[in-house]
Length: 166
Image (tube, rainbow, N blue to C red):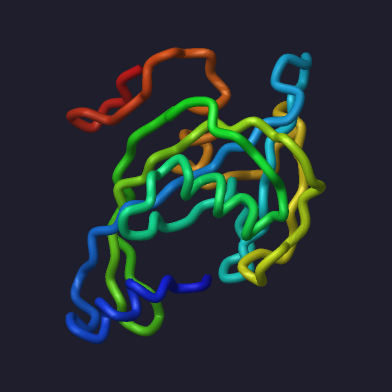
């Protein structure tokens, strides 16, 4: 996964200490009104997992713009934000080099505008449309993000006291 320059600069100052960062998950839908709409998924190069496109919000960047940017950078697809679907906090993570991180993740539902998915930047080995009825196995946290984005709720879902509030 490509590490943003601002994170590298922070790491020079704080070493491997924990960083609290803002991340986005971009759940891009195609043919949302169809009986079996499709979701854009990528297979991560670092661990082989299927996920929606994810990324880090740059300093001063609006999170919805970050989601759109990440989709273009990682999958070569043009998309437009529809709504904020879920606010979540990830579990703390440690990378093989010792860096520690935790994210507040903002999951957005986006609508496909143009382009066919392909692994555009080396962060992923595959990118494709998957029918909602035939999604590959997803990690629990990714499944929650996709389900929140697929829903028709007007409200943003979030966790409070360990429970998902819709």
